[in-house]
Amino acid sequence: MSAGLSLAGLRAHPENGGLHRIAGPEDAAWDAVAVESAEADLPTLPDGGLAVLLDPAPETPWQQDAMLRRIRERGFRGVALPGAAGFDPGAQRLAGRLGICLLDVERPIVLAQACWMLVQAQDALTLSHVRKVARSFEYPARDLPDLLRQVSATLGHPLALVDGTDVLHSSGGELDPALHAAIDFRPWIDIARAGSHTAASVRVDSPSRPGLRLVVFGEGLSESQLAALSVAAEVAMPAVAARILIDEVAEVNDVSASSALLRDFVDARGLADDDIERRMGERGWRTSGHHLGFRMVGRGRLDPLPLLRAVRAALGGIAAEAHVTTAGRGLSGWLAFSEAPDPATVERLARGLRALHREVGRSFAIATGVGSLQRGAAGLAVTLDEAADAARIAASRSATGWFVRVDSLGLEQLLLAWTGNDTFVPAAESLLAPLQGATGDLLRTLSAYLDQESSLVATAEALNLHRNTVAVRIRRVQELLGVDLTDPETRLAIHLACRAVLAPAAGDGVTARREHGILGA
Image (tube, rainbow, N blue to C red; front, side, top):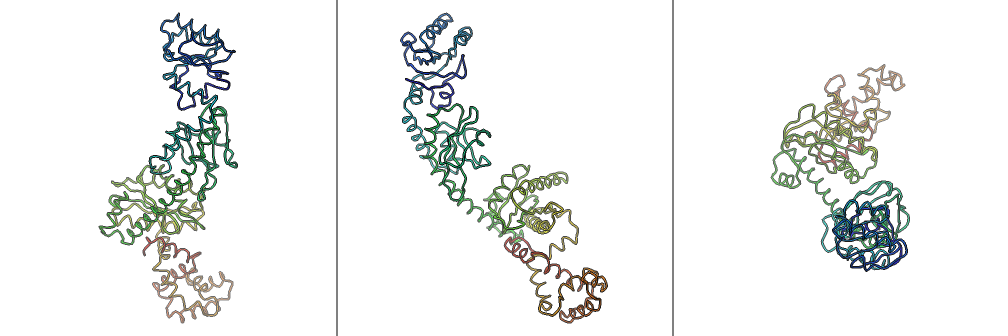
């Protein structure tokens, strides 16, 4: 056989006969390979060959020394044979001094076939890899990671699915970060190198997830190996792209079902319902015990599904049973406990949710609210409601980092959050409707008047009006609404109605809460 075989390439080949280096240079490479039964049958070669012997190694040290010297005299720089691991330490040192790479091999015929493929039969090597990839499809995969595991195990090389910034899935090994950075995402096929690490990759033709590549990687892979593996990656790619689509459809269906289940549960306000309890149990959602709810909403346009993926991944850092699903234009979730956690644990978990909010907030513009610790099925509905109220408040609080806990809010803030629910807001709009068509800005004058504790002077200064103008408008408001603003309860109700109707993006808040399906009065 002629040129171009290396120890690194043989090690990287999945079918190398169980090869192990015993002594000699680690970076050995050979210009030729000879396969014989015994060293006495070896030809004389130009300096630099590898001898693959089928007979086992000699047992005595002097025989081992003599064999090494004769192999070196015939021009070989490496020898692989069964039993080389049993060479005497002195014989191993002699191999190193002579510059001979001493290799132990369990199945020398398999090693000889590997040498033949790597040196002279790249087409056969490629066909072998393609057959292995095809064989990996004989058994249906549960999901994308399982498919990658099957292909990697059958091919004998590690695989990774990557995008430009991250390794999304890997099997059989960890992709070196430097090698990941060296991959060129533009061409259809790319060969990348970073030190001893090498990779062959192909672009994944997935319309729903652009910018992905399927990578086959390893250490010491030769040019012929990389070329063959790039073809194997091309063959595997359509199955990977199809699996991505299948998993995404299944994910969307599952999220839709879980979101509907959560809505049904909270609509029941935690009351006993055998069907809901059965569905909750099938999904592994605990309703007994204690719960700490949280809610995430977008501070603008937001696709909940990518946010859900990010949150599910980040929830692994919180030491508690956690459940989360999409709800309206955001996410709702909770931490569950079989026994009531002590206050210190609750504080630690709340800090964990804040850290999760910061981590996810690097990629998504979100506001997060956290409810209080509650007990039982009814308590789960309560803490989810509280979390939604807190998230609504957090969406307007940049000073708190867009994060609010119900336990940190005062009574008046909770009352104002309550005014945004889908029962109060329509009633408030109906109550104040007579002011909408009247001349003069009666609604804002009324709101400012109540904000200024019913002071005509303070209201006039706030609105840059004459106090008589304010007085006339307030009398007109009382006439149109048929109310007496000197009555404390009436004044409070009207004040809350103004806050609800004039709140920024009030309509969006109502829609969000209606879509959310878990916020009651």
